[in-house]
Length: 365
Image 1 (cartoon, one colour):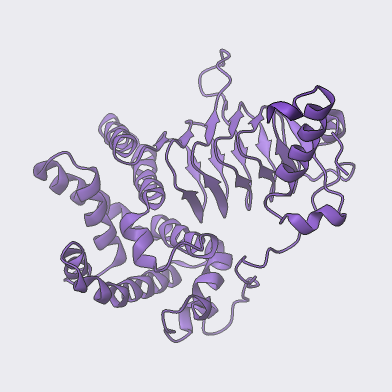
Image 2 (image 1 turned 90 degrees about the horizontal axis):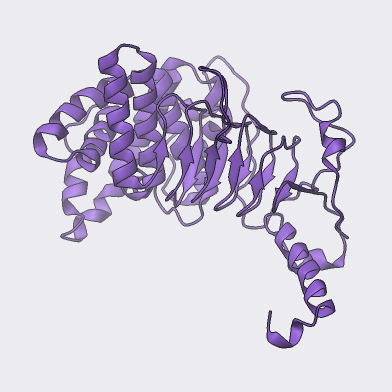
């Protein structure tokens, strides 16, 4: 049985980053198709588990080192980031061998198996080829992007984004697929470079950051202001139409689908005031949802597809429609749903009841 919760319950005592005991939250269950959970490793004399484990075969179920890094990315040291990035590059080179069989992809295989010494060098070259309008601009972009990707704090985010894509997207068969063809990864990586340039200050750096934003919007259909902050392990699935404003903050391990907007309300604000949302770690944002203003989406929260949100969402909360906070009560109907779509099934049942009462059933509505 579903019921609508008043926002007053969510507002009482709801500080930034603080859970509210008075608001019921969805029962956390694992879907059968979801990847296995891997607990965050503890640091030992040999470093993190992902850094010292032998290279496994390419089968998804055996690539647990990516799952481990996905959980531990925030704690990785600079040397560990370099080791995991080298391992990702080595894996993609192995995957590229299969691409030599087709004339359209043979050049990609030859390129990545060429003379690049680091993952940052190859990603920088590939991004420049996707973003530039002509060859001269491609060379300048490559010279700008590659050194930034060489910074450990930036490369940590890039590697974590690939790991997040791997554990989140069953359609992803290889790491090379995401690195070459997933524009969500291209958009987040371009933004990480633009953000570093923006924070470098100066008119020329900020103009270069805005140029990268413009090129990313044109090439990938994703518009992220260079000042926006993205955590480690952010994945835009399909990505088209994602818009993120200048003062938005997105935490670690966040999954969002296409058409998501993290925008402002349009009301006049003081210069420098925060006017865009904060999305905390482990949140999921459904396709086409719009989140407006300086609101906070709590850790582990879910925003349903096409939802409009202008109020804080509590930790592990679920919101659909227009600011409609839901709670889940398990019953027999849950046999027909999973942990990612239950709110839509029950909302549909509610609407079916309304259509029958209003005489819409015979019209097929």
